[in-house]
Length: 311
Length: 276
Image (cartoon, rainbow over all chains, first blue to last red; front, side):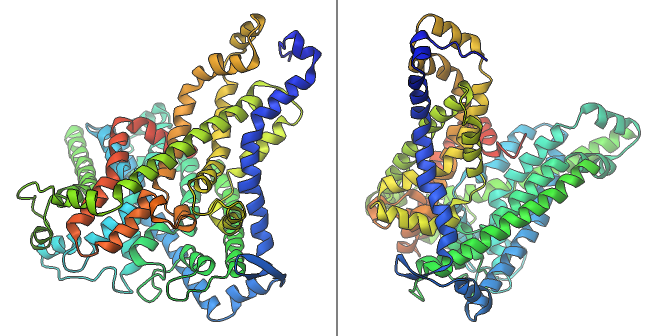
């Protein structure tokens, strides 16, 4: 295609090249300096021993061996990993499950459905720090809103965040409250793309709401389900803010809310209790997390895409 | 018969939605209401409305804490980051979308691959990099990280949008002898406003709310952002719940107001990418 370039530029092609290069340079420079270079270094650093902020010697796979197999590091790694897996499963079931039901309810477009979309999405725009502190206050055993409300129906004070059995569930609840609007509106958008004719035809064939939901809507929103699943997975394994705010840097009580994000941060930047920081081990953890998330995502995408086609 | 069944079903659906709306809104309502109460009132009757609207908490937050400073820092850092993201990604997107040159698809691929990189996991080398440049504990260091994080998807959106603009406009301007810079600035960019709004919101919300990067990169109290400042603030006023609720309310206020005015743009900006 002819560019309609002016004569002067035609005569001086370098002026055109210079102009294009000038347009691209700022963005490329930032990307190379603050994305590409750090990313390549992240992989390199995992194989080095560190002396403070500087790598001091190549040690092969030693950092990986320590975080995966040497106690106490390996215990911390696997304990945190387990909680990330639990978080993913719980969010899939409770957050995305609720989101699916609400999206299906909103699909009916009954009066008030627009304002409901705005309401359910409101917490999504708030900082996780605000949401975390808010629910930390609400979950206070004596003065918190939750136990006050439960007290009205005669349920005694439960130390939500202080008990190892309820702490992780409690911060997951806060996380669900925070993010529910996101999968809801993504799934709703998927449902709204289903053609009206298909839904009408099913109705005329006598399909009830339940049959409509399971036999028509669910299979036809497979692409949206894929995206929500992948984003939930990535989010669960990068989880940091809400556990940090609600349960502290060490995942209290007793490590029952520790997740990889917290453990990584403690390892890399030191915690108040240990005070030591180890960039080598931290880099190894970061590489493992990156490879795990990218690998599982790639495999899951293949599987989920195939499922979309079959359905 | 069928109609009656329909009415009952719709009633059940409305009930479900009403319960959900209460769960989403009531906690925020309690947060705001508690900010007008005294500490004693919050502890003795947490569920009741404030008996009189006391602004004592507000005065305390305003005068005894660094809250205003945190707020100003967040506004400045978010505004600077979004402005640079818009500028850099528009320039790059314009080059890729409107000119044919040999490396254009490679350059686009490079930007797109940046979308898959979780920059949080590269925080250690990023920290070392910024330390070498003397940018740890500075506005500029934080802004550059946000710009780097925002550019890939911004370039993707701008390139896609700028490609859809008709060629005729630009060509007739060239015939009239307008310079390339003038064509871009006065003719093409005004048409790109809808895409610029999406990119701005998509980046402003996560930057405004971010906690991780300030936590690692900022240590001086005077440079802290609002979410980071809240953690300082909560540490200082652990038992003064009236002040805590006021701080949370004030921190949530700016973005909530913007969201109420621009809810449609917020929703499409944030779900952009997941909704095709």
